Amino acid sequence: MKPILNILGIGAAGIFGYMFEPNLRFQLTGIQPASEATHEKVAIEEPAAPTTPSPTTPQIDVSGLASSQLPERVLLNAEAKVADSKSGIVMTIEAGNRVKPVRIEGESIIISPGDGPFVGKVAISDTDLLQQLAANPPGPATPAPEPTAAVAPTPEPAPTPTGESEEPAAMADPTPAPESTPAPETAATGGDVVVAAMQDSVKTAQIKEFTFQQVLKWEAGPVETIDGESYQTGLASYKAETIFGVKTIQAKALLKDGKVQRWIWPKSGMEIK
Image (spheres, rainbow, N blue to C red):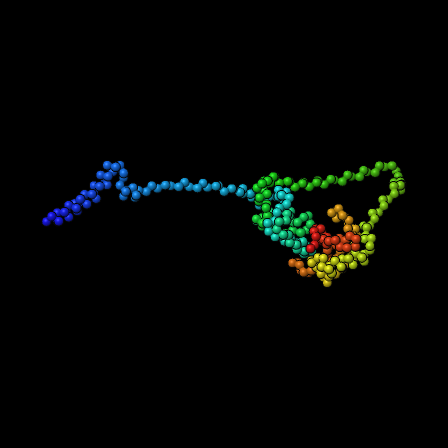
């Protein structure tokens, strides 16, 4: 009987300790029960990272800009092609070069390497036009000059009745006639030497635009001053296949001391490679 009572006493003590021990410990020691302390969680909200506002790009409507409101030059961000509609010559301008903006056409811009006949079309996004206009907004368009009014001719005075039937004969003008302008200076070495120098330049592949077999005509030209230097010139007319069909195209040679220094396009003055 005694062992049974001992077992019941131990069980009652365990139940009593389980139910009342946590509160009794907090009252005696001030330490919160471990079950509550370990299960309490404090939510710490981390501050949101500051966001940097993205720079805004001014929206510029370029569709209504006149040619006078465009910058003098724009930078090409991509390769562009320009052509001369008369000769059919097509040239490629590599990215990184600056060209002249001619006018705006929708989302594109008409460009030219200079004042020559070569023009081409590229997307506005392939140039730095918008960046230049954002940094320097365009001013008002320059008005076109008004046409000059025609001046009415002054009527000739009516002849006075002097009784004379004819006017006296005009006296000869004693002022001598101006001397005629001399013809352009030609090569001191002679046309044959100029032609021979051009032929040697093409045969040795100084340029790759055309070959010796394509040339239809060789001719010596006058002495010209180009970029502050004096050159003997010559022309080579050759036949080439273009986007406008087969065309006869001219190339100009610049010579010094009987040798070709470089070849250029006669109209634009750009160098031929």
